[in-house]
Length: 289
Image 1 (tube, rainbow, N blue to C red):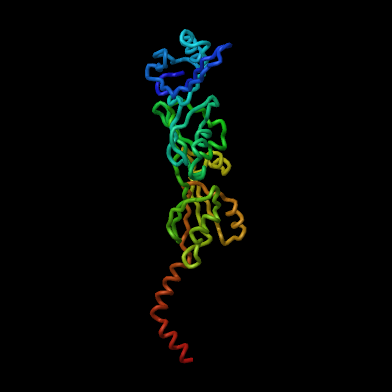
Image 2 (image 1 turned 90 degrees about the vertical axis):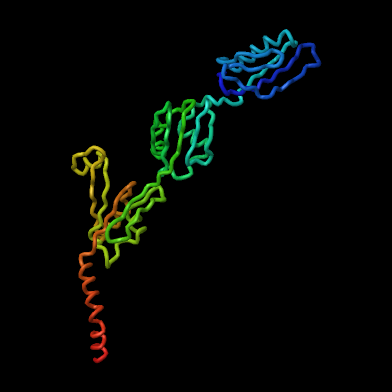
């Protein structure tokens, strides 16, 4: 047993081979103080730090032997706040979680807290240990069991909601839109913002900007750059086959979509202006016919 705020629940009973008046006494929880000691009835203070429950039970039995016939003692650790971690943030049941001999890891302690309140794709896990904080996406943690490191007493685990978003500019509604689904494809992303409108946008010139990994850059024949290689994809939605491609093109966090202005947009604006001036004459001429 360790010192500090550990609580032990000992149960003692006096019994003997010919004793028909044996009694069982359940003691209330006893807290271990900062010096690693506990007060025990009929004995006084006992130093218990470093002892296991069976060792402590035997120690108490030996000291009760002169006061009770064949004493038997059972010691059970009820709570050990030193052997715990704190789980906070966007989790269903934040609070203190006790560690066991199962050597719980990050995923285990999050599950014990009821799990994250948002999807794993939009959740970041922060682990603080000895003043140093590391972070890992919850989805990455789920897909890589080797990252599910065992926790240590005193660790602080925090789950943060970081929604993935993509941004749209150009000849459409300028917006920053959350994914809201585990997987979002390019066609779905464009549909959410209403798609390229005929009068404003050029469906031949839809561009997607993103930083790609070294692997993708190499497959495209490019030299990878530190921090990711900037890539611009051009999607021509006037080509029907590109709709099938867009259904397989998975969006990533912080992607940027740019929809170019329609090539005849300026002409439409000019004709609209001319029409506003000449439309009464044109209408009159038509009626005259």
